[in-house]
Length: 272
Image 1 (cartoon, rainbow, N blue to C red):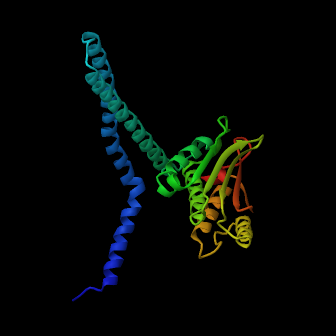
Image 2: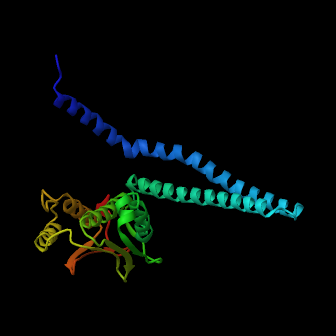
Image 3: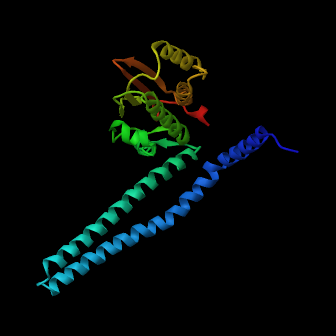
């Protein structure tokens, strides 16, 4: 008996969902672990090779002061090559580290103290794995180095910040000019995250509905606009930490401001 194609598709989807469900908690840690060992070996050996080659070139120059200009040029090229290898291995390690920190954050479901400047910096670097965000958008990031820590669940904040960045990226997809500004600051009671991007992700009417839904605690902005719904859910997720949100549309720009009470000013008992 021939099995309908639709049945095959449902079976595949069921297997795919099972695979995806294991991805973050089971597969990603193994992938990162298996990458880390050879990467550390590459970095260590490239630095060792760099030092040994520099020492060898110095000895050659000392012992053979009559070295031909052609040979000297070849040695300099070798030094530049190994410098480039060491530099690229460092860049590779930085990208690996940003991905590892992001995935670790998504698996952290305990209440802790969080530096949102550090987290936003990591989220912005992780967002560069989206090639359109990396290559098509002009980005400005201004971070307060002495930002007070907030209390909360790291995975909540990580997912919320990713949603904000993703929303801005989607909102600008059809704009000729694509600019994204993100910053952190604070006052006596609150830490503030501010995001500004060119273009509109919503109409004025939709923004009003967004504010109403945020006030009422509903996640149903519009069944046709996934990006808006995801952004709203992210802001609702932060409400349990006392976060207040303001969305402003003006002059072909969208500004999202988030204020979060920091340690000693907010109750996060409900977060657990």
